Length: 121
Image 1 (tube, helix red, strand yellow):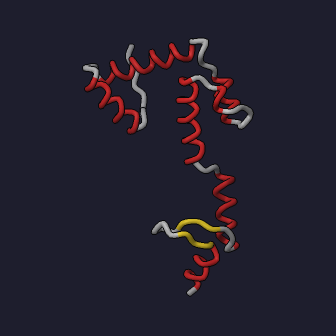
Image 2 (tube, rainbow, N blue to C red):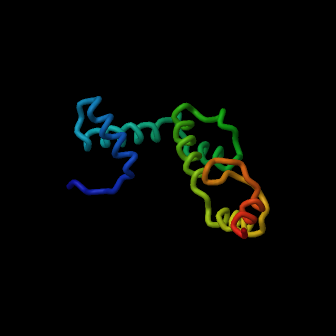
Image 3 (spheres, rainbow, N blue to C red):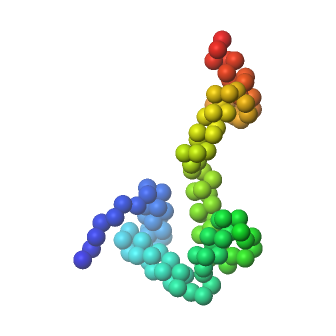
């Protein structure tokens, strides 16, 4: 029995492009990718433990196979672009105190104290 799932728009966009290139239906393309992923995970050249160790900083990326590196890179990108509630609170407090530096909405380098002074004017 077929089931429905939600996938991110980015995945769906990539699947639509790939399905057209390979003359598959959208469902056929996603099924194809699932089978490839399943085969990679079952292979001796793929280890979630190695990927987890690298993500935790306990091993260098050079210990990863090409397939593992691709999974690690995707996971790493998600980690560094998704701040945790703790990091959001930390940086909010730094902004409140007027310490630190960063980029303003125009991409200019600014000190936090400068931003506070502008708001107070």
